[in-house]
Length: 106
Image (tube, rainbow, N blue to C red; front, side, top):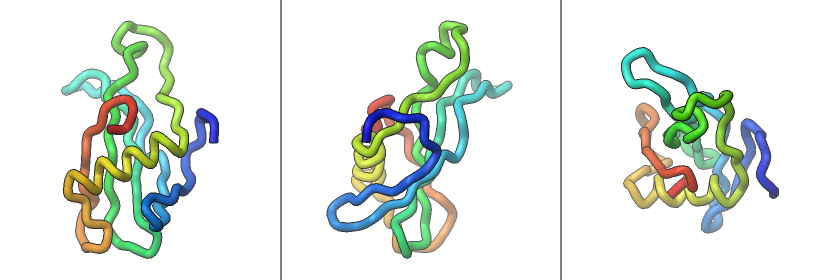
């Protein structure tokens, strides 16, 4: 899949299917300044979500027009792997676990 501005989809990582959707667009917070976009990941037929937070795009920090990072299957796959290696357990119950990644999803 080429880079796109889709807001959801699914990827297969190591034999498991993960659904994802855009949870939050980049926005400005009164307390913290610019915050990057957040995507929600969930292993298909599992209970616990992971929210992956990206840094704000540099163009926002420079005062340029809003926009978000393009998302493709490779980026989402890196996000899934990063969340799993950081301790996300999709089969457990509970509130979504929040992880921060770099602009490439690592």
